Image 1: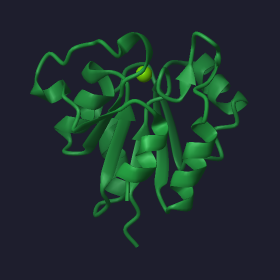
Image 2: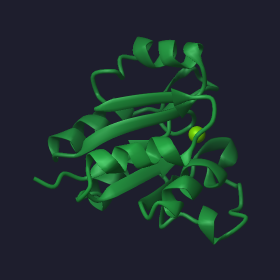
Image 3: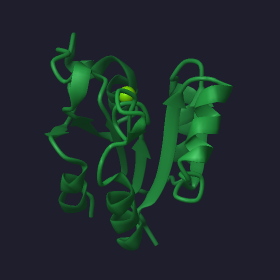
Length: 145
Ligand SMILES: [Mg+2]
């Protein structure tokens, strides 16, 4: 079966550091996506504190894989693609210069979440331009199928 794969960013995509909480509705949307057969991954920048926070928020059981890394890199994204060679792969995040650029370089479908402090960040090149933009995570249930 060819399940869609979605690779999420953490900070300011699922998690709001200003309120120190998950973005409202996050768990519901993730649950709905899983209910539709999507396989979810998380790639977050950070160190041990970030990994602890992700556990504390109860996200471990939601994702097929979680990677916390000091620097987002092509290798981690490519490793997921290798596990699902025929799947459609989506990347959801808020930073054009980070996960959107990496996703574009690997030919994934990139979805930029326009939220918070980086919503006005302008792509510096075509590499950083997402295929789609969303204002709410709930829009994902219509996009990913
Ligand atoms: Mg982010």
